[in-house]
Image (cartoon, rainbow, N blue to C red; front, side, top):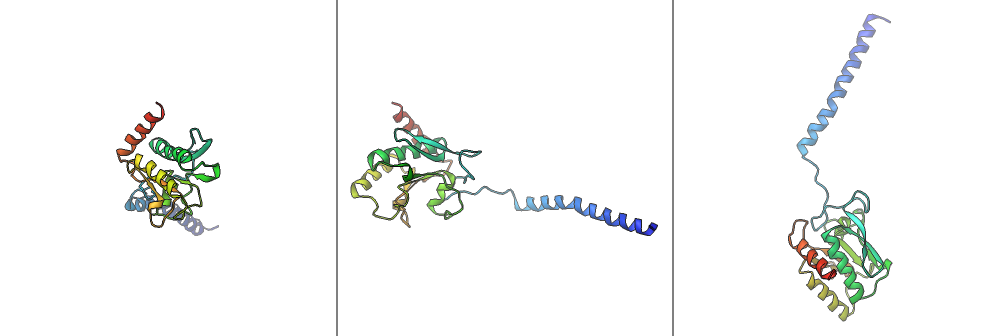
Length: 193
């Protein structure tokens, strides 16, 4: 091996090492120019969750007195949505487990539409598959309207949306709206009397 071959090999290896050490710094600078990545949100402004019951804000919660469980954002959202499900079960139509769904992965949901709220755990589907207009009898619609009135505009029914989805109920306010914790507190106080 000649001295010239050794010097050339060292130059190539040294150059490659120098370029390799610069790449992570270049990538970091490029990332800083774009800014920090913002988490994805559902249509109502809540952060979408990658899963339920594992490193998530969404947990499976029981619906008292019904034998049903639903995956929802824990805390105030939970108090309100579980209340909706319980009242629907007793005042509109008795539900079976197959009639109820909460959190769903964002993939497959239409982003920007109310159904995307399922991905944040801030919506529930009651009587899945019965989303078309006219899926409820007039007395059932009146009961749903009564439930919504008690929620003081915090919950919206997909039956009032376009396109219509009578199975969808969702939190209609963002995560920093002060009316949500007030409603949740009122529901908790009424439940434990």
